[in-house]
Length: 390
Image 1 (cartoon, rainbow, N blue to C red):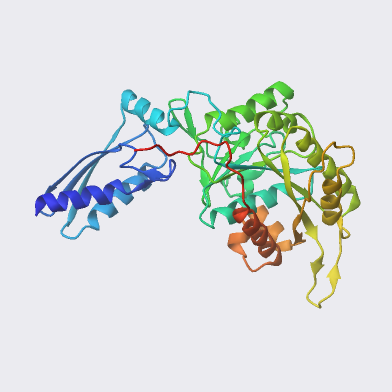
Image 2 (cartoon, rainbow, N blue to C red):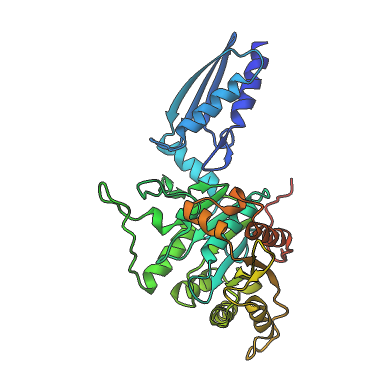
């Protein structure tokens, strides 16, 4: 009977998921020993590093898992830390045989990479990207989000990763791997997580870097951060067609591009350029999203604060693409997100509107766009699938 209980407790504890690595701790070799003596389960686990930020959560879930086994009345938990050799073995397992500093999102990746771009700032691209990431994650997809807008980073605040003092959680480091913080099921990395702080002050918020530093930052985000197996990786791009857009084009020529604009001509005319530059690096424009579209007022009238038709104009222009040698094919308008005070207020509060107010018209529009992206087909020709013959 004791052996059966021991097997059951081990199975329950092994299934506990590490909240940062998003894998069962049994698969990560974090469960060192399980012994059952009568109704007492003695469990020994090891954490990845000293001061692991997920220590309390893992410990509580391990206790709960062991106690959930019928016949167990007491759980004695011993918590240790992996040795250097054990950490080294873990990082090698997580890399899946890849060399150190090998970028996993290149042309052979099974992850769909989508760069969200805009021609100019102020069109709500980051708010849209953050909500789109959460909407995709809520559909059961594994989603990562890179805040590539190094000078104007805002993703941590939009996803509620900023505390009352202005602090942002740093990635957990396991040797040379960085584990990104997770917000609403989305793994997130941003330069805002690395800025130095003075005692009693908010993080230093200005990044004054030029091309080479910007390129290296984006490259490190894609290489040194362990996202694990992702279905979709979103990149919140800076506005325009500058250094970061060129770097991402070089690093991720296989990426899809989603162009965001507002209805007004001043924004839509410039948005076309971001799509054209992406195409010049080999990326594929998968669609256009119009943000801050017409708002329906309580009396049924429509307020076109920023005009109308900008999204359709950008989609039509990118479908024609004059001057290109080959026809780019039809670029669809994936949706129009109406101007929404609720979306703005939730963004300021660090709460994705798709979660806080799913019935808001803007949230509903973002969900419809997420539904289109989630089921969009993608070619796997020439890509190596992770299967081996037995």
